Image (cartoon, rainbow, N blue to C red; front, side, top):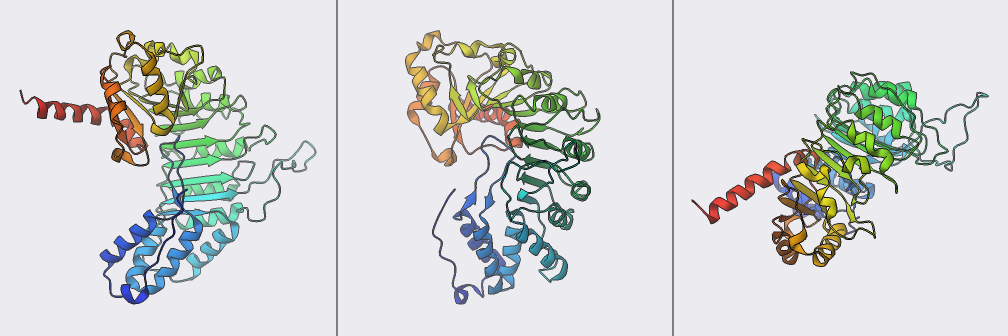
Length: 430
């Protein structure tokens, strides 16, 4: 999280500014503001302003009409609500009070702390929650009210449940009304003692056919057996794996009706049980994320060729202590890979160390691998010349950039190959 001390503008200095000038000031304030960072393992996740900063920005609406327009436009494109009273108050103001014509056009919404009733026991009583009662939890009806009010503009919805994940009929029906929703991120308790409401999750997922990205981060999810033709437009799937939820992920990925081209997996220490998830997408997968390579890649996946797989991404790079070499580059999985992507801060030490310990002449680079991308908060502003030269010595071009979004990852191989061709044309016009 970035914590920067900000100086807000004086009213007498800003009341005559045009909208364009105010917009530049607001963008500068937002860029320096405390944020809830996006999850680097999820290429569809987004960052959100800290709520205290949202409150301070909303106070600036009173400076002038230009400030009112710009502030609402900025705040209500990307909003996180962590408390029930915030959600209910906003819904009430939105329904009954004048804001600004045409606003708010809320596109990305995070409801952080949604409460779902615990399921009933065999005796008809709610099961006890392992999570202490949290007085600020967002009630399903207030979550539904906010989503209903922005249903015409909402494109991304992130729901973090306090413990049990599930959807009341009111909340489920409201989400279904958001026909422009293409990204859904759901997280909840990862405790094996919390049974999630798989029936209501299944009911919802079967009724949002326009969804392109789905992220599920909770344990103890039984096989949902979704209707075969559900989620026909799903392209991206992010999943936190453990033994209590693997069958649900297998079911999602093994239907031929779903064309998932970008898969992101967070396996546990023993990754082998997750292999069937990716294998269900063998003929169509183009981008694969595993939290750490090569140590968290399942054995069955290592030995499988994915003909359309062009980008392999990780957050960390670790090897088995008994395998301090680059023999894993010979795995069939790597034979179609054109780009490796990893975090600079979590991956550069591994690559620097292992390339220093290995005879370069003995390294077998996969036939199509031409690029490695290190993601950094500085983007291309970071330049590690030593690392560039090390990779250049084995025929791989090294790049530094911001974390690519899902669409960027899908086109990353083409982009880098095109840039390389242009660079070669400049060096050798013939």
